[in-house]
Length: 282
Ligand code: PAF
Image (cartoon, rainbow, N blue to C red; front, side):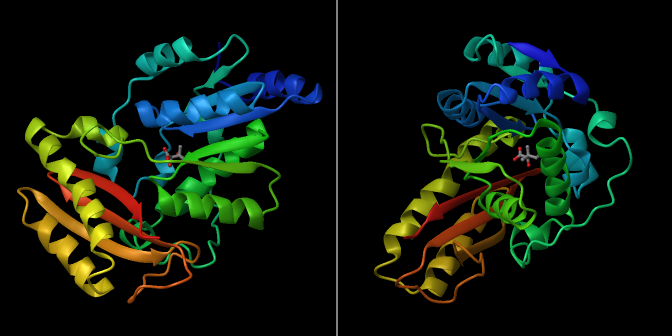
């Protein structure tokens, strides 16, 4: 496995593969790798001749400076985890900020309304920062495919949207949420939870699973209210939002829909840690 820290070397390396007609898969990450990331890497390994995992904690997507400061960061450990599963020809790209942003990035993106609710409403500027870094990585690496997790459901929709809108010839591959044995969605932020908070956190997915089962018996507003009240009763937990949305427009729904995909998306604060999760209702 190769390690690159500058744009030019990784670009040269990857273009030599692409010139031979080989496929390249990109797994963008902010490090603090867990089994969720590794499932993306394994999928990329199975579908491409060469795979690049980028490790870059992108400052422009943090709307809260404390969240940026606290974000777990251990690139040496990440690289050694990747060495165990990646092949000789695969690569890690771990650039300093000046490689990604040689100049301050002032671009603003249009997400066609997909950012109006949920993360877009609660984390102003977050998706613009995500779009900045993802399009920079696409521009530098020009992979055939790029892999993203469904845990960040709104992020995935937004990345699909900009890729199509900007005619970027990269296939976006969505990978399912990976959960801990007790159901908690894997997240780099889970390591920031205290052991008590970690136990409480298992209730998020449990409540979502029960909510899905209530669908036949209760109205959508009742299910929303039940989820919010139940989680808000738990020590240290505060629901920021729970919305059941149309899976294409991401607009919040007020009643169950027959022929539409519906996804329940949640964000909670547990102590100082912010966690998100989602579940399909159809
Ligand atoms: O999902 C993430 O880890 C980040 O938002 C991403 C896509 C790597 C961009 O920094």
